[in-house]
Amino acid sequence: MTPQVQLVTPEMAKVYLSKNTDNRQQRGWYVSCLAKAIKRGDWILTHQGVAFSESGKLIDGQHRLEAIVEADTPVQMLVTTGVSNDAYKVLDNGIKRTLSDLTGINVRTTEVCRILARLVYGGNSVTTAEECLEIYNTGVGEVSDSLVEYCGKQIKVYSSAPMRTAAVCLILDGYNQNYIKNLYANLCHQQFNELPNVAQNFIRQVTDGRVSANKKSNLLARGLKVFNPEYQDVARLQISDSEETAANAYCRTIVRNLLTKEKK
Image 1 (tube, one colour):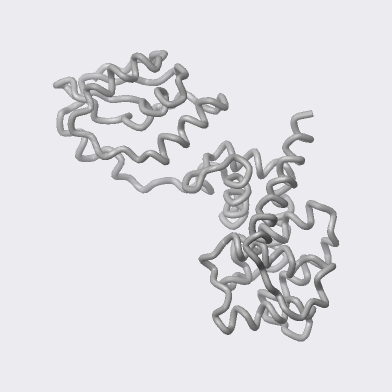
Image 2: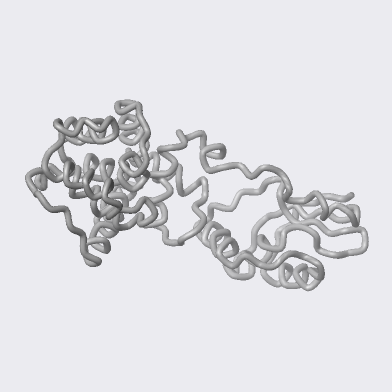
């Protein structure tokens, strides 16, 4: 095998892709994710690059090459030739590393960073480690870690990522941290009598099956009302489609403002 670092241009990438005769089906969402990283300047040269078999076929690097073409930007990449014709049998078969593995961030805080990164940077499937770290360092990480440590308990729906994200964003927006942390802990520990009216109503909705953990935008919007002290006396917790959209915009604005401050 012969490895060599090359500056792979979009034109070169197209030539390399023409040798892609037996590769897997393209995952467009992944290509777009890599292309966005390249455009932002987040591409880093690593041991993962492009590989050609002894017979000249492209056997690894299809999505990276497609991303170079989509981004229309050259990047440095390790190009290896002369790889065994049978190497494709073992490529990409290892256990994939999670964002938590890549960043060293607590798993539950990583979930919050992922939600906020998708709101800020766009995309529905993949968030890069760099995006997560950028969100984490705005203060999101410190607040989320503190919230998780303070509560010390996980319970379906109540401690879900959208609910934690709502609590974190409200704290970062200046709402009473002690109120929010205590409410979150009481929700997770099911201390019903310690909860304000809006949170008690939320528990009844979850118990009756009217709230689903799978509807993340809806849950985020509910969380923003549950943890907001201005809504504590509300007896009926209702969320419209426009409120879901507004909730996403609210969290996006908070994080974008924090990112802007970080760059000054």
